[in-house]
Length: 162
Image (cartoon, rainbow, N blue to C red; front, top):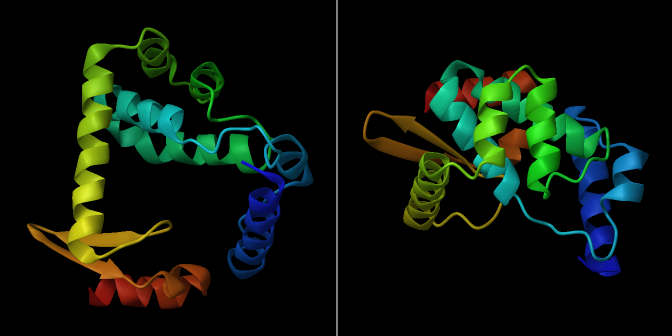
C-alpha cells in the first residue's frame, strides 16, 4: 500500500467507526496503514478455513479475534504466523497448527471458499467489500451495503425481509 491509499483507508475506517461503533485504533493506523505493508487477507482466509474444518461453531469467534487483532491491536494479519498466533490466543490451537503446517485440506477448502465467494459476487454484480449476500436455500440476495453502516435494528429488519 502507498501513502495515498493508507490515507484513503484511514478516512473510510474513521467513517465506519462513527457509523457502526467498530473501533479502529491509532496503533492500527501507525503499524498497519503504512507504505510497504501488505493489504492481503490470504492468511485470514486460511485461518477461517482451518477453523471451519476443525471447529465450525467457532468461525465467528475466529473472525472477531482476527478483526480485533488487526484493527485494534495493530497486528499484521497479512502474515500467516501472526494470524496463527491470534488463533492460539483465541483457544483455537488445532486450526492454528494446521495453518502453520500449510495443511493441504485447509488450503483446498480456503480456495473453494474464495472461489464460491467470487462466483456469488460476480453473479450479483458486487464490487468490493463489504458485501453481504443473504442465502436461503439455493437463493441469494445482495443486501445494499448502506444498511451495514446504519443502526443495528434497520440492518436486522432488512435482513429479516430478505
